[in-house]
Image (cartoon, rainbow, N blue to C red):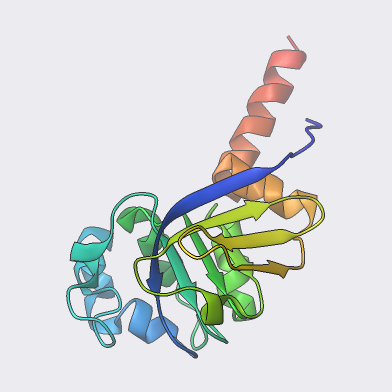
Length: 178
């Protein structure tokens, strides 16, 4: 199933965090067995009590360096979808967090300097193209750019994750073989 992924724009209110926000801060271990609906009530609580109350569908997380560092925890990615976060953009993202996010269909991007141009509550636009990640602070007009992610990764995000992409490809094969 060949498809060319074009420009994708995410826009929403920014929730800002500093450097080295680890997976235990994002999804505290003591709540992970309770499921995502309970875990979302405790997301980021070590750095921002009742964070979940401030999040609306479409909001964007903006962070400093090394976002998602620490142990490999898939719930630290999947809880973002449950909260309605449309994209995560940071100065840098931990490799496993980045890969897990893409695999789950959660847009996760690096754009060095983004934490310096965005304040809590600013309106932010993340424009994803073949050439670059362009982050614009709509509130102030400031911009930063990040390296693009490969088209295959963009297609995984667009599909909603690897499993969704696989299902779509299998369905396409089924339809074309009839």
